[in-house]
Length: 524
Image 1 (cartoon, rainbow, N blue to C red):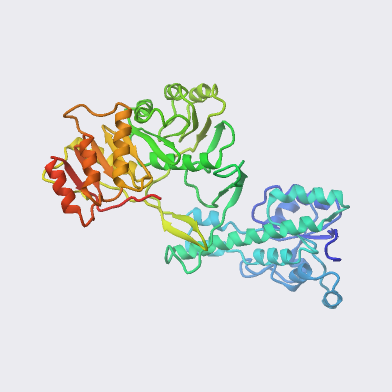
Image 2 (cartoon, one colour; image 1 turned 45 degrees about the vertical axis):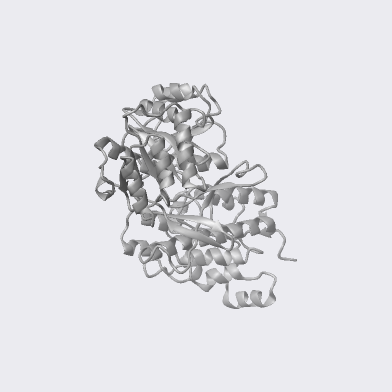
């Protein structure tokens, strides 16, 4: 095909909102004697840099109007971009109307996402919906056989390098690659706009799309034979693993990222100094403490075996004192809102530990959507941001819980929200002492949690309190009775089973206190 050849660039149109590197790029183009057309602020910056620039209005013979809404929507622009250079009818039309070719289009779009994120009013957001920009991008991308389209400053160097290697021309392979990126750019832009409109009406619009920017390709996925990458959601500023600063350690794996997210979201549930240790996406130790070092000791004590090779999340600055404790065992990742320099120095002796600083904690009450891919579709739901308060709890047994039991039940139920179903969490004095996760039977989860508690020698002494949280109702009394046999004195569960009366009667017979939350925390 004659279109699949190197195409020289004689005229370029540059109109960018993100002006990163644009002066340097334009200088590189000018070195080839390329005529530069431009608009508004871009034209001003290029002229101030000493570059010869022709305003688009001078090229079209038509002034910008309507506050800049109409400036590039003109046949002299789109005819010059869309013309098929080796089509005689196109060429004749150009000659008849005096339309010159535009061989390079450098455009990125109005900052709609940043405008919305700034809290701007609706009129300002509307004015930051680009019209001419996407039209030029799509035109140039469609005609990539002849026209080079650039939407990302990261591609400037590649374009100049290609031109250098081909006497001022670009190869078809590069133009095709850039065209694909251009359509991704406009698709992402429209996705953000449609999401903004949808958010003003419903969380679940008739059509939905998502967009992300590639951060990096991972070594592999869950298993070595799978490929994987990490994408960042534009406009999503929630502190966490995806956007954290990596202060030391080797590249994060797919499983590291997944587990670290689980750990950091869990530790964000607590206002007191807290530490969460996660293994395979499930907490194996969670505790609050008088300070972060105390919280770590108590979280680690819950399951010293599973903690080996785990993920450690803190909701306070990682101190040197805590770092000294952590290096006593092998850990994959440490994530915290901040890291003391002395702590980082201590951790540097363990070069393979990934150390992440987020700069803040996520707000557990902030709404957002979670997605799961299924064959032929997507399951979309809002994030589980349910929070239990003492006022929401209903005592259903003859004995009411003590103040300490009540505090520990709320603590345990928060942990249970982050444990795979069926979830059973044993806790006392602000720390987990046994966790049963992901079993097909709630009874088995109860037994596993009790076994872990006994194995770690954390069974409370006779007469001491011990609470149990269940993420969903007990369908039968057996799971609750297993907890009672392990020494439980108080139980928190959602309630709602047809067997609730039977379960309550069994709790009364054992002298237990039990409260219903009315809220379930399934996690699959």
